[in-house]
Image (cartoon, helix red, strand yellow):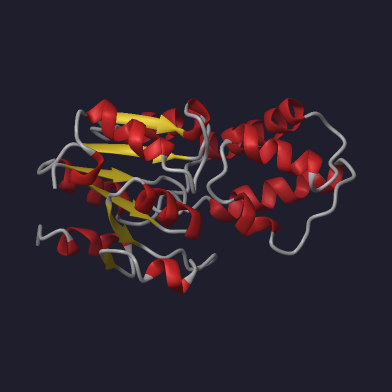
Amino acid sequence: MDAVIFDLDGVLVDSERIWDEIRRAVVAEHGGTWQDGTTRALQGMSTPEWARYLVEELGARLTPPEIATVVVKRMAARYAEEPPLIPGAVEVVRQVSKRWPVAIASSSPVILIKGFLDVTGLPVGAAVSSEQVGAGKPAPDVYLRAAELLGVAPSDCAAVEDTTNGLRSALAAKMAVYAVPNPHFPPDPEVLKQATAVVEKITGLPGALGLS
């Protein structure tokens, strides 16, 4: 293993529920209807992908760019107040970075990734948003790009993920996957079985990587 690539939402920040809350509110405010399975379907989508979904599948009466702007502005306001950091996550990334190069491969917009890094000051060698690549998770694009920026072969990387689509994305990139299952949106057990290791909390990652 030559590098470790972290997902952001649900792994380093406890933001999955905030995304869900804000998207639900915006869809309702603009005449759309949230459906069973919507939350899971959206996980891992890039900004253009989920914006189209909210309009075309849920019936929100805005254009995709308009609804993306509204949702991301509300998320940015939450982050500006205080990013919802997962306890111990920042310390874990620092510990891992002392041994291997680290990167972030996230479905969050660039502005939110930047806000997180500005607050934490983490020594990240690359940070990629799925809105900067061809497709969101479960496609492997965002992980492949992060590995490319680090100058490391994908098969020599470990990925840290929490949701079904995130796990599928990293597996499709042929990375060793370390799962930290999201307690609010548990991943598919059949997908979880394919992980190299499963840890209950992010603070268990160093041990799984052989650092402690």
